[in-house]
Image (spheres, rainbow, N blue to C red):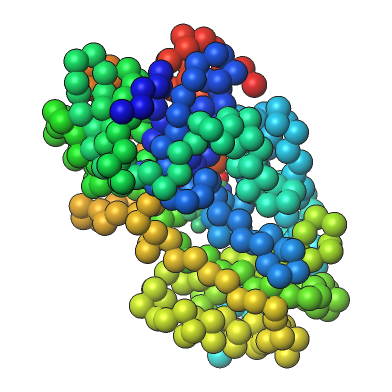
Length: 357
Ligand SMILES: Cc1cc2nc3c(=O)[nH]c(=O)nc-3n(C[C@H](O)[C@H](O)[C@H](O)COP(=O)(O)OP(=O)(O)OC[C@H]3O[C@@H](n4cnc5c(N)ncnc54)[C@H](O)[C@@H]3O)c2cc1C
């Protein structure tokens, strides 16, 4: 059994940021991550042309202060989402799309230079690979004497006086067993807490040229009639590689990947011309199928339902279990900013120190 001062479950943005804050203050933590990669709901695909395509988190605003401050501290650059040119709004399949331009006065959304994984990689470097244990799925947490014993896949066992979970709450209580069990009201709350974006289907189409810009299209599209519901230009900051990226209608989860791809291609060719069919690669991620993010809910759950609930601000198992993750944040829960805020909150509780970035 490997002993540690603190165990963090999950190497998403919350887990990595928490480990970073603790390490800066001299507290050593190990992160147990079920997946072979770090990042969780941040997942950047790199195409053949070198273009980065976000299958998870992409945009933020300057109002997301904790995230913006963390980016500044880690020297991670960002740039505004390209919106210049003609944008399209499809209302019905049998009428031409409405054309509009995004007003310049509109507050921009920003993207991270080199892809959102730049932030994850930077945090991973700061925390150190020796502190991140991949392919290690936590299955049980039990109280033993004055510490918690964490049992994982592959018969691996770890123990610590403090354990921080960063799993989406609904996933936590559906996939990890606790001895003694967690309070009933807490478990019930978790099963009714929405996991942000876990129902999304993201897609990205990689191209050799930004042919839409040549025709003065921004690449922005909203549609109520096609498989693509929302789409934006996803080219690199230096305009050296190109992609269109967005969200597909969630109902198309019942289709095969090939069927979705054919529909995406048809919609893009219909709106942007033959060049749209001549792509380098089609990429997609169906988050509902991701067992390390999504678990079925107990009934219908609204977006952001129960996020930041007061029961998430408490500790459990004799004050040794801390509940974290973006869904527990009291401000901007669900978003990357919520993840950084949640990390701050728990690191402050553990260090008894105010964390200013
Ligand atoms: C499609 C999509 C689009 C998004 N777009 C945006 C956006 O544009 N802007 C924005 O601000 N936010 C966006 N988000 C939300 C953003 O991704 C999250 O707020 C953030 O990444 C959550 O980080 P987290 O660490 O709290 O949780 P997660 O990223 O879910 O991390 C939890 C980690 O725990 C691991 N894990 C799960 N089970 C176990 C187990 N049993 N044992 C060990 N490890 C386990 C997982 O593999 C994962 O790495 C988006 C999310 C998705 C899915």
